[in-house]
Image 1 (cartoon, one colour):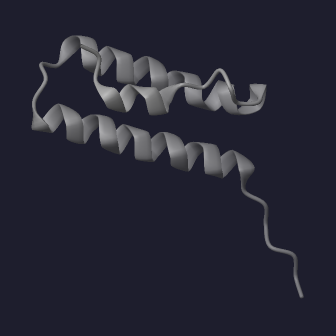
Image 2 (spheres, rainbow, N blue to C red):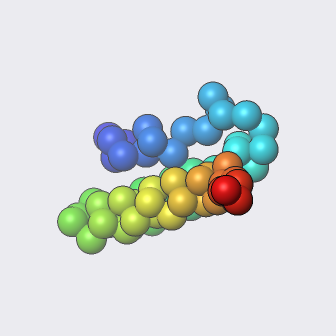
Length: 68
């Protein structure tokens, strides 16, 4: 049974620029699922990887605030 958190690593729905950033995180999440046995630490690893992916996507979308 796949880890339920993997659903949040999907990237097909994203614009191409964001897919390029998200894809490596998805690939690594799948590798973690395949190579590490299910346990609480694997869950933590996947959750932190998801946080990193979200931050990377936000970094691409980031815009400097306009000076007032």
